[in-house]
Image 1 (cartoon, each protein chain N blue to C red):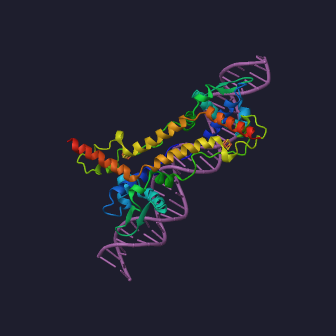
Image 2: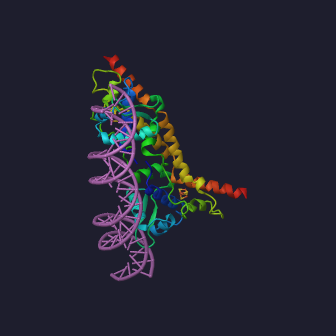
Image 3: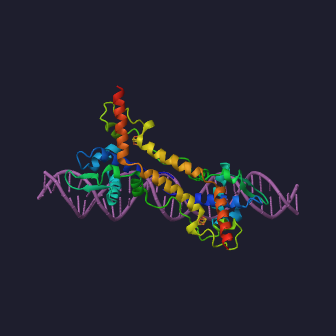
Amino acid sequence: MQFSKSTDYALHALLHLGHSDRRNNVGIKELSARLSVSESYLSKIMSKLRQDGIVRAVPGVNGGYELARPAEQITFLDVIQVIEGRQQLFECSNSNSQQHQLLAEAGAVPSEQECPKKSGCLVEKVMDGAEQNLHRYLREHTIQSVLDEAFKRCNHEVNKK
Amino acid sequence: MQFSKSTDYALHALLHLGHSDRRNNVGIKELSARLSVSESYLSKIMSKLRQDGIVRAVPGVNGGYELARPAEQITFLDVIQVIEGRQQLFECSNSNSQQHQLLAEAGAVPSEQECPKKSGCLVEKVMDGAEQNLHRYLREHTIQSVLDEAFKRCNHEVNKK
DNA sequence: TTTATTATGGATATAACAGATCCGTATTAA
DNA sequence: TTAATACGGATCTGTTATATCCATAATAAA
Ligand code: SF4
Ligand code: SF4
């Protein structure tokens, strides 16, 4: 259970775009050089980001990528969901097996098949809670917030001198 | 980014063990029938759980598995970490590339190579925060807490009748 | 002690996925 | 028109998840 390298690349690419949006249209060449990733591979990732409306792309001379919306509106969750997909963290594989009657039997209830129906599954309830929690946190952090912090930190270093 | 089926199986197996610890030593046969998983595969998972001290196992006639400690001391995090491993959610793949000088340059600081050193990386800071958050939540939920809730819910259903 | 039972671990097979590359095509600005 | 650039399909490789089989070890009961 780990984020893929693609997510790593996507985040860094976006940070670069967010940082250098003075001159628009950063090419895949510049990006791939910065991240030490092949152009081919990174372009796939950028395509995904474009399809999901995170960046804009323009081909041709002096073409390249730019953020499709302000960096403070691009959250970590946005990026992660584009790259990793939007499946749930936990998906029950056998809700129609005898398995979850285990939970039903805990109360020694006669109507065994009724109690923890899939819509009210207690295992999924815990896992979904974890996922909501995680999402809330990741929504609170944006490309811009990281850039801001970097800026603050470096200013601090300057002042110390 | 999803939990594996093995984690699903492990959780359900432990819930079963926690539920039926009246008579000790639940065999792999009973477990695999309950979960609709092959004995071979489930036994690998149980072995992992045993190696990590979550369950005890005893071979031979009337052998089987039992929880190695009270169900309220077995957290979701414990189980997930045994099965999924303990790697970090996010691991930077290229801290020695030019990449993270991006963050250093944000403040236009002369000493570019000093600023966001790996130990103080702002991307990892966000991701580690997310992970801590997730772990805290998963530590608060145990095998027992799910069984308790199932019990409560079923009692409630009984009272309604 | 013997035997039936049960867990263990190694080897292996398969499918899916991540990571990566190549290349022909489409699109745009100069 | 042309040079530069992004796009998307096909493909390749290595790794991991899932799964099975079998020989061996350990244990309790007879
Ligand atoms: S209890 Fe929940 S997770 Fe388990 S089998 Fe039923 S629906 Fe699936
Ligand atoms: S900024 Fe952080 S995540 Fe990015 S390359 Fe540097 S150490 Fe790695």
